[in-house]
Image 1 (cartoon, rainbow, N blue to C red):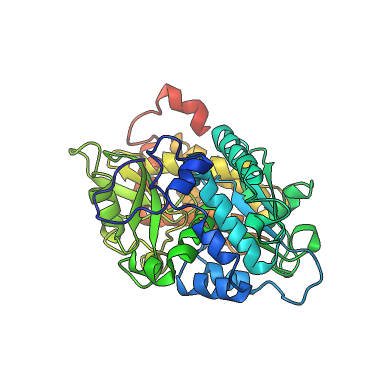
Image 2: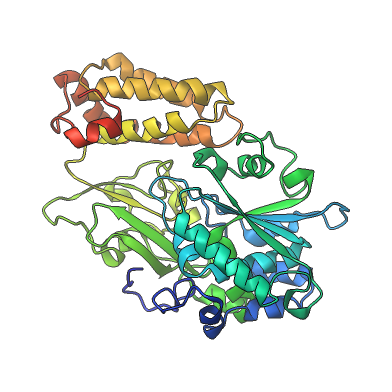
Length: 442
């Protein structure tokens, strides 16, 4: 956890540097589970109202208000209700949720338990990415501690409210980060998205009302209930969304890492004041992928904008997962896009033809261009293919394929032209170590 230069009260990361901060004793020493104790004495609707007033928005990428999502669960349903935690942090360039699970797992347990009380769920599943070995171990240790302490089980903290919590470990499929594919996977089926409606809040896990929330979203709930929505809102510098947030900065910056910052900073501040600016002062900023590899790319003139869900849309992109990737001058954008599309072509679940076929076509076309074998007609094909994928698939995977392709081509068209006109990459040959990774013919 890197230190951020802004004066702000730490919420998510306050125990990350404390020995034993991941244990029950360490969490309780910092005030942990006070929110759950308070929530157990509140009416479910009052919990939902408090979370709604906090302006807490989903931190997994979509930014949907958490309280409003909880309110969609039908109160008169006689079916069991569930909460599923989306801990399948699979978006390339994203690495903040695992810090919560590794360093403050009880924070996630507490927030999830409060969410269960709010919607009337008595079972919760944490769907964790298969590669997250330490995170899974720490989460299971925390769950075991919570059962032993009476925080989970037949009577949560002696309240009479029953709650069981289980970990379901994924197997490395990107598509299982999509909420309905996640549900299919928990049910033991192939991880493929469902048609909607019905939406999960009405018919989700085992055809029962279900809420799916991201790790950081639920981790914020305990402090919000404990200290109040007004406190949470005041932690942010903007009214667009409340609280602090975790940002994971990677790429060509001086100080890559995970930082907790107040809401309301600009993307420029995140890059230059939080992450220390460019790693090589002699190389200027060339581009930014603002929130995971599926987000449209931005130019340097676009970054002096609020780093929040609404403001990022004004420059044609998304805050996404809150993890920007910084790109310096001298980087081949065609090569970068080829790697991005190789990933998405490989990760398609195969259910929809536009993704299954179009993703592979995009990757092959880009591979030709990067290898110096492309034509000007190939540039037209990229835009044509991407436009036919976007908006024509069951889930948003189609956009994850199309948005990078369309935005990179639009913003760096001359660079694509150079590859065609020169018959080679203008930035030099692909390093030998990168050939296998990129899939491009050297």
